[in-house]
Image (tube, rainbow, N blue to C red; front, side, top):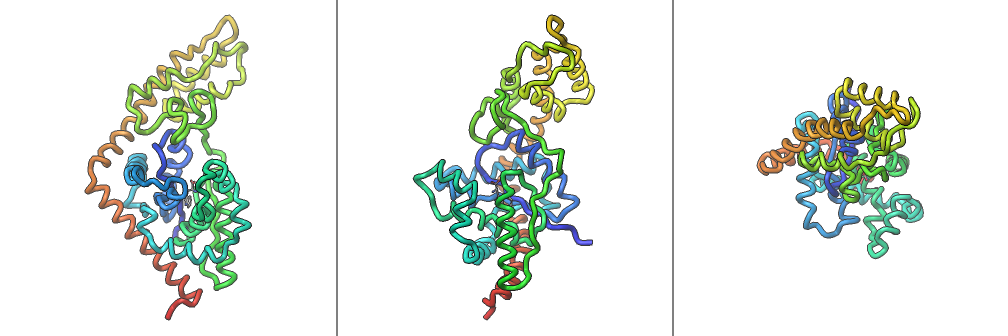
Length: 336
Ligand code: TRP
C-alpha cells in the first residue's frame, strides 16, 4: 500500500529549543518511517514578517542542520527549502483567485500580526494561509503535523482545496492537522512564565545550540520554592515543568527518586532538594543537548554537505510538486 503523504513547514526564525524538539521535531522523526514525508523550511513565509533578509540565509542553514541533528534523515524524507519549489508559487497564484478578502481578514493569526506590525500590513501577510495551503496541497498531502495554533490555517487549506476541486475537478485530497494525541508535550519557560520561545525569554529557554555551561546556568536558575507542605501535594506548574523535563532527558530511576522525594516531603520535613534535582537535571540535559549541538555545528561547518542535502531535497520536493502542477494546469485548462 502507498504511504500517506505528510507535509509540514518550519519557519526559519530564531534558534530551535527544547519545546520545538519535543513538540515538533521528535514527531517528524517518528513519522519518517511510516509516511511519505515532505518537510520544508518556510522561507517565503518569513518574508511576510521579516523583510530584511540579512539573517535569513543563516537561519535557513541553521534550521536544516538542527533538524538533521535531531534525527531527520534526508534520505528518508524530502527535506527542502520552500523557495526551491517554484511550483508552490504558481499554485499560490491560482488559490489566491479562490480566496476572499473577508475570510482572510478574519484569520486569527492575521489579526494578531496586524496588531504586532501595524506599519507593515502587506498582502503577503493577508494571504499567508493561502501560501500555506499551496505548500500542503502541492504535494497532495493528507496529514499535516502542526500544533493547535495552526488548526485554523488547516481548515482554510481544506476550504481552498475543496473550492478548487469543486470548480475545476478533483485534484486534491483534503488535508488534516495531525498529532500524536495525548502525548503532546508542552515545555514552559524556566522562569515559570509562558512557553519556551525562539526569540524572547532567552534565559528561560534551553536552545539546542546552548553550550554545556549555559545549560547548567539556566537550569540552576529555574524557578522553585521551599518545597511541598504536605505529602503527595499537587505540583505548582513550574515544578511540574522540571519533572516534565526530567522525564524527557533523565533515566527512569532518577525521575522515580525525585518523584518519591517530592511525595514524601511535608512541611518541616522537606525531603526533596530542588538544588540537587536541578543539578541532576542540568547534567542529563547537557548529555541530551550536546550530541545534537555538535552534529548541527559539524553540518554548519560543512557547506558542501549542506548544499548537497538542500539540492537533494529540492529534487525530491519538485518531483511530486511538478506532477501536481501539471494536473492543476490541465484541470484549469491552461494546457495549450
Ligand atoms: N504557519 C506555520 C507555522 O507558523 C509554518 C508553515 C508554513 C506550515 N507552511 C506550512 C506548517 C505548511 C505546515 C504546513 O508554524
